[in-house]
Image (cartoon, rainbow, N blue to C red; front, side, top):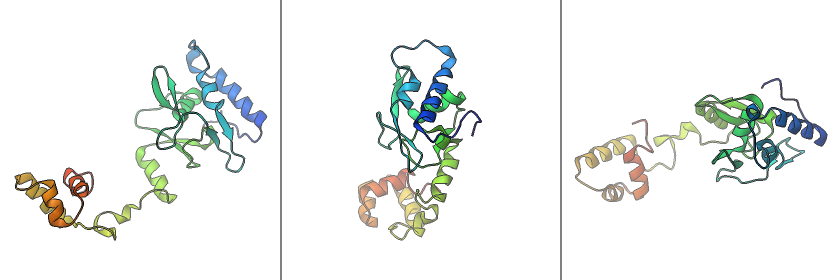
Length: 187
């Protein structure tokens, strides 16, 4: 975590961080209307139990704060990171130690790759267990052999996805995903 971030416990400290972030705005570019800093942290409420600063503006389907900036929709945490610490390298995410997607408290952020974020989620029990893939999943109706056979038969053009789904006793969508490699990717 960059040393510019100071732990905040009071509303005054929160306001001080907001003032600091306003001083660190993007290269002194002229802005119209409210600054991005105020649009992020000015729309946050502090959760005293978790220490999260929960963004109260728009959120996407996954619960992450979003706002329009320079003509496009951006994640509040990502824009906040760039305001405070500079550009984010391609392929990196702003991850949350608190696992609260609407949190805009910089103390709860760290940069990581998709893989690191996934490993963090699995370690904390927030993601599907990777050891339950394929036939290791007790609810699996297909096997590796059946998926390989279904892909081979479909590639020959001898049947439809619906026909294969009926043959193997699964939903059409499950068979479609298996054939296209959305599921059973490792085969």
